Amino acid sequence: MTIKNFKEWLLITKWYSEKTINNYIRTLNKFDKYLKDISFNQRGVEQCEKIKIHDIESFISIEKLHWLETRTLNNYLSWIKTYINYCAIHGEDVLDTRQIIFAKEHKKKIEALSEEECEKLFNHFKKRKAVWKVQELIKTRDLLIVSMFLYTWIRVSELAWIRIKDIQENMQVIWKWWERRTVNILPEEMKLIKLYLFMREDSSEWLFISHSSNSRWRKLSNVSIQEIIRKWWKEAWLDHKIYPHMLRHTFATLLLRKKANLYHIQQLLWHKNLNTTQIYLSVLNKELEETQKKIPRFS
Picture 1: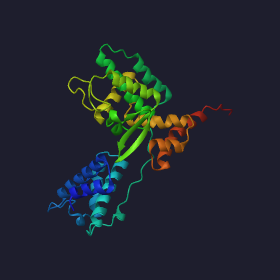
Picture 2: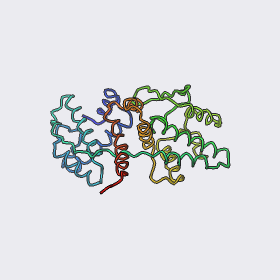
Picture 3: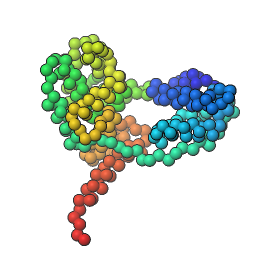
Picture 4: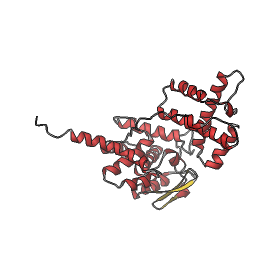
């Protein structure tokens, strides 16, 4: 079985996103190199019938030396397991993947901004003066990016691929995992979108583009958007680092603080399982613990 065939199978059968498939293939290539390095006859993952449980365990042990998180290592195991199962489906006599044991993961820590930090960030936008027209344009674009992250459930990969033609009144339709999904846009963000488009003098189909002289009108990449968030975090002198997905976490935790229904938040975030949404309750549990400590002591 070849890695190329496996990649095509993931695309056609599983309908995985390009990013997810790349994660599978990158891990398989890494495992393939490891197998060839330790064998005399350069056997790799394509000789799937020769893969033994100790090969997988040794590979994970080596990767663990790179200080990877348990979750990442478990992902490696999961992707290798999927490949071996794929080989079994196609008639190969392979390892029984029930032998693959996953490590116990610690509960995922949720990082989110407080209301005070959100206010501090947006106040920085208000105070920031723009001298040139292009500076005002960039400031408006960046404010829109931060607002879209904070007031919708959108992810960075989805935000980068928004086309202007997809924008409707109070509605944004985007592409994610081969599905068309709907994002409700609040009037304040719609007003900001219209302002940003009014200020632009280009014919690009993309909503978020570069206005730098060396890459003018080019669609912003995921990395570029992350850099924009990082720039505003540093300038606003917030207490800790901000990244796009943290604003998605903030969106969920702010709704919880306002006593929004957990099921409604699940639908907004497009979580398939309510248990995934419940991890945001850990943020509130910490706040409750701090509140409990304020009780007067009488002994």
